Amino acid sequence: MRIGVSLLNNQGIENVHALVDLASRADELGFDSVWVHDHVFNVGHVFDRIGGRPYYEPMTFLSFVAARTRRVRLGTSVLVLPYHNPIRLAKAAATLDVLCGGRLVMGVGVGLIEKEMQAMGTPFAERGAFTDEAIAVMRALWSAEEPRFAGKYYRFEGMKFSPRPLQTPSIPLVIGGVSRAAIRRAARLGDGWQPLGLSPEALGQGIAALRDEARACGRDGSKIPVSIAMTLATARAGRYALGTAPSEIVKNARAYADVGVETLIVSAGTSDPGEARAALEMVGREVLPAFRS
Image (cartoon, rainbow, N blue to C red; front, side, top):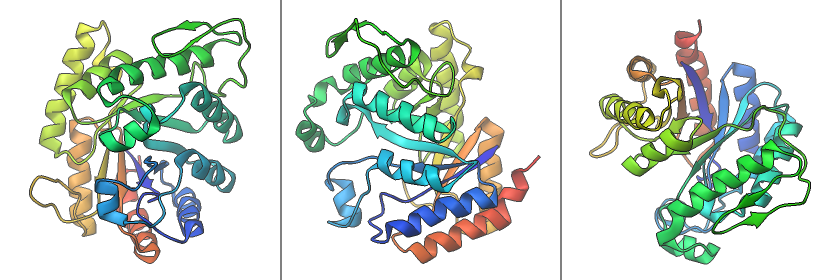
């Protein structure tokens, strides 16, 4: 199992360069990947967590990180597709993939905050349909120099599109979410599935459902990679966590590996950059060696 780390662009940390330094250090320590998150407004649970403090735009942030790293994969966990024009996003993502040497992984999802989605111009009730079409739009743009598409929200033909991603056949699109709808979308359209906060037992049930849904779509569910985002914290009612002591984290991480997780994304869940750096160093020293082949 590979270990990735959240860069905490969603935690209201004022010193953005401390977060870039986290990415550089993760690259040095041997983490597999670094991940950023996506909201436009500080509203709902985002406001409850950080108030008016900064939440950094993920693709811009990853572009800076790309220039400061050489090896780690660069992931979004997850981009809320109804907040984005998929044509512009496809161009930005392809550009970033070329710049970073083919290291981009795009986790994508439908979103949950109705007020924010209305502000971004997508009807909340249509977020699932928009997400499906946005995925199809991006793949069409990445697959041909002169792509064609005819959908409900977007139509284009007779124009060249560039650049194309460095990765072939395209940038991986991993479906985020814990709902049955997210599992169905991952089975139909995803290059992977990425929930968050599930216990190993609940995740095992989700993986079984993913494989059932994939079979119904004519796909082999065992070939759809599963990743999960988890917090370094003490578990509480309704929310599973990895724990805080190194031995506890290793034990829980192994439980995820046993149910089939390929990438475990850990988050320090803190607004203190010093605590974030200490957590990164601890995981690099105490947890990564347990999962190196």
